[in-house]
Length: 242
Length: 273
Ligand SMILES: Nc1ncnc2c1ncn2[C@@H]1O[C@H](COP(=O)(O)OP(=O)(O)O)[C@@H](O)[C@H]1O
Ligand SMILES: Nc1ncnc2c1ncn2[C@@H]1O[C@H](COP(=O)(O)OP(=O)(O)O)[C@@H](O)[C@H]1O
Ligand SMILES: [Mg+2]
Ligand SMILES: [Mg+2]
Image 1 (cartoon, each protein chain N blue to C red):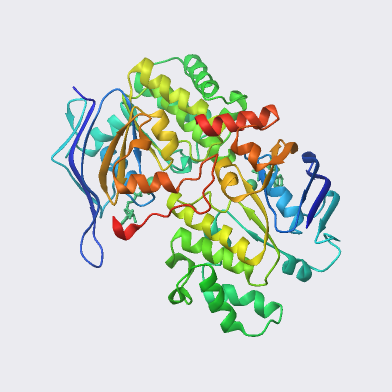
Image 2 (spheres, rainbow over the protein chains, first blue to last red; image 1 turned 90 degrees about the vertical axis):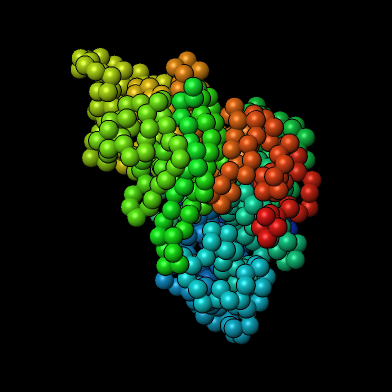
């Protein structure tokens, strides 16, 4: 579904990704784990077509990234960010936000689709004409997920989607993401620094350090504390001991 | 005698529907120890810290039956006296260091200025101590960072600069509001070590405000759990999993674990609280 081979990225003279390679199968949930600055978001941006230049091979759904138009890409992959407040337009109602991708792509049945999506992400229909600041952090993140799903993309790129939320709200959003993935057969590429979140939501993970992948493994190895790289073990220890 | 004594602390703001109490009758004592304050956002943690420091601005109102720091009654203390205390003996690290660092003064001189509370030092002594403090918070190139303005450093670096400032001030009481939230776990451990050193070696009293239940319960001597402006439970170090109150238990249950096997995470039932 997603194939990343020898991805390298530099900003100005600094190389921030070094020959990063991994594959994500259809329907799989794959995590990119690492500390801040390790290059996680940059990988997602490359896949989402948001980087001007990079080297390597990126395929999404068996087609090279960059081959089709931006519009084609939007129907294949959508991104959800950490800060729903920053990613939603402050003066657009939820209805505007969810309707916009439909309008751009000429998709009919707008009202029904917007209402169905509100139901799907567990947002009451009475929020439909509210503005982002009239919602709680968790509700805003539901809107961001809803927006990402309006075009029915098979792939979601999730960049720290619950890092800014309280733990009980995080639990709600993690449950929602898990349920949506099961229902729609979605493929997830999740960026996080939180190992327990990976354990809950993902099948496999890659551990990133300073722009290089240290190891790629099954989430079972994470759960049992059997990560093979020294750095992976260090992250595991810190997660357990604080 | 405890360092800080608080009885029936209340913080109220006016609203369209009459006054709203955001801190509702808090009582606790703090010694030369690490006290954690946890709770979800909006539970009143920051308002509690600010009220103790005398930093609630109008129209907010603070009342308490007792609010005593090291024998000094903080209620109705003139603003000048309060400011003097804040500059020297009690200090607060804010969630966002951008609000507590002066944006137009370079980092080095700003830390040197904070030392003034301890009397006269030569220019050279001040500079040496400033560089030591930046090194103590694991800033690798202190001389370079000292020349930067606060907006030129990342959030995590700004947080460490704030802590360096506290290290030179050696306050008797520190209220740290989410001091490690912007930091990676690797740096977080180092910062906690510094705070620990201030408590253990210099006998500081620390109130550590955080939403991170696990971290606080592992690291603090005891924690107070806040919900809707009130303390619902006190828990001693490492006993989080023995929590009794349904709110605390709900929060603990909703955290994913590293060996997670649950298909769905339990969600806090707020209507039952
Ligand atoms: N647009 C940019 N210009 C320059 N440097 C950047 C840019 N975006 C990211 N970087 C740098 O690339 C590195 C990786 O960043 P990022 O992918 O955001 O890390 P992560 O998401 O793991 O925290 C960091 O050192 C960051 O400062
Ligand atoms: N200036 C203000 N006026 C009225 N209410 C406020 C003001 N600032 C904060 N609050 C309210 O006080 C409550 C407690 O806030 P706070 O102490 O910041 O919570 P925490 O730090 O636990 O997240 C919140 O419900 C918040 O909405
Ligand atoms: Mg990132
Ligand atoms: Mg707060």
